[in-house]
Image 1 (cartoon, helix red, strand yellow):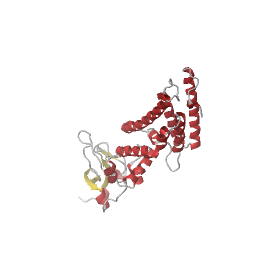
Image 2 (tube, one colour):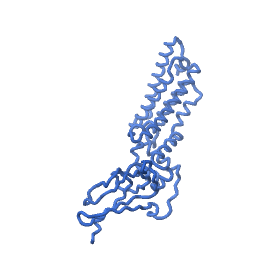
Image 3 (cartoon, helix red, strand yellow):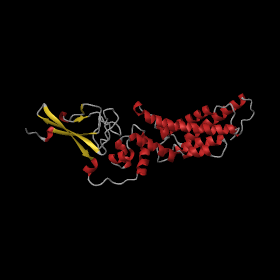
Image 4 (cartoon, one colour):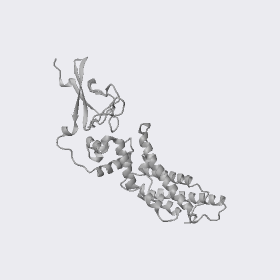
Amino acid sequence: MDRSADDCSEKCIPGGSGGLDERGAQAGKDFALSSGCQHAFGRGHGDRHDGFPLLAADGPDGSGALRLSGYVLIVTLHQIGKSIGFVSITMENLEKSRGGRPRAFDPEVALDAAMHLFWEHGYEATSLAMLREAMGLTPPQIYNAFTDKETLFRRALARYHEREIGFALDALSAAVPVKEAIRLLLMGAAETYTRPGKPGGCLFISGALATSPQAQAVADELKTYRKATEAAIAARLGTGQEAGELPANLSVERLAKYLTGVMHGMSIQARDGASAEDLRAMAEIALAAWAAEVRKAADSNGETDAGPVLHD
């Protein structure tokens, strides 16, 4: 039986959520076969093909046992007449179809590009297509180098910790009185969160503002970094307390939570376009509140002087 080319439609599917799913018009022929396969960089249900590879598929136990790096699933609906047809499924090697050997790349440069993209857009809003463009890599190269999107994000967080929060480490380790250390910390945040040419705010803070329950592991990872910062602040306050710079009855844990909250607020303000001057003003108010809290603790403890923390 003869049939025209119009009776055949082709669709490349990165994976979906089950069943034979109709995507759109095209005379009713634009179909996608989605058999529960899971794309390693996020489910592709409802997405048009843009070169995503089929990177992972759910095994019988849902463990993602099948790994096919560098391939796409091509689903073609062949229609014969009005009610008879069949579906063919083929696999295509992306690198082979493009011809030539995969181009070399610097994984460190690619990781920096991914870090800035996650920093600007967050984890879930960053798609594989965005990563491909920013990193300058093919999907198979991304997969082979970083395994999946979550692993890439974790690597980006580690890179951010290594490259972008030196101001906090320097402030908390400086050989200065504790109040000056905290001043350096907050003023450093004001400058760092508003640097030209970089996304505003802190990745550890802004990255957690829009994570769904499906990304709980990512949210937990971000929380770990934030809690580590809070613990470092508490440790520095504790050192100052042991040196007599803070009243013995002052809760360094609560003060650390307050200061961490101030930094969170500064990060969000920076995302909303606040300037470094705006954030420095916030820091000054926080330092004034700090001094008032220390005086209150000193008075209740019967101390006439709480040490150099009370003096600029």
